[in-house]
Image (cartoon, rainbow, N blue to C red; front, side):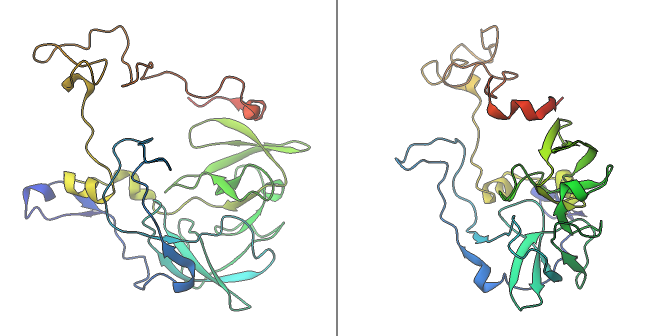
Length: 273
C-alpha cells in the first residue's frame, strides 16, 4: 500500500494500492467488451439495490472461470488490474496462440508456466480436481458442481483450505469459517487470490466512493416517519423500537436471510461464525 502525501485535507491518511507489480498495457482487445450499468435497477426500471449509480465507465474482462483449455500449458504474459473485481487478473497465452484471462494467485510472476488438468503439480496457479489436492493445501476459485466453473472464494486475498476427503466429497473450510462438502470432481486453483492488501485500503474521501459507483446512504433516523420506521421525533431521538428495521419493516441487524430448507444445506457441516 502507498500512503498519500497530504497535499489536500482529503488525502490525509488516504492509502492507495501499489500497482508496481502490474504490467503497463491496455486490456486485451478480444477479451473485453463494454459493460452497461444497471444502477441497481431491474428490467422494469425500479430500484432493487439501493445506493448505486454513477461511477467511472468500465470495460468487462472476459474471465475463464472454467476449464476451457484442459490439459494445455500456458505462460503468464501480463498481470493486470480489473475494475470489476478486487483481485488482480493474469493474461495467459497457450501453445496454440490463444489467450485468456484468469484470476491471478498471490506471488505469481510473469513468464511462469501454469496448467489446468485433472491432476497437476501442487503449485500456485495450477488448476486441478479437488480429489487430487492434498489436505492442508490452500485453494481458491472453487466450483460447487462439476463443470460449473469457479463460483466461490474469488475476492482479493481469499483462500479456502482442504481438510479431509471421503468417497465422493472433500471437506473444506471457507474464509467465513464455514465447513462444507465439495464434490471430488470439482476443480479449484492452488494458492490464494492476489491483492491481499486490498482490505487495508483507506479511501480517505467521499469522492473515491462515488467513483466506485456507490451513492450516499442516509440514516433512517434522519428521515420522516413516512419514509422509514426509524424516522420522526424531535432532534436526535432513539428509533423507539425494540429491534431495528429495514425501510420495509423487516427485522434488520442479525436476522438470518438464508432459506430454512435450502437444497444445499446437506453439504454444510458447520455454519459460518
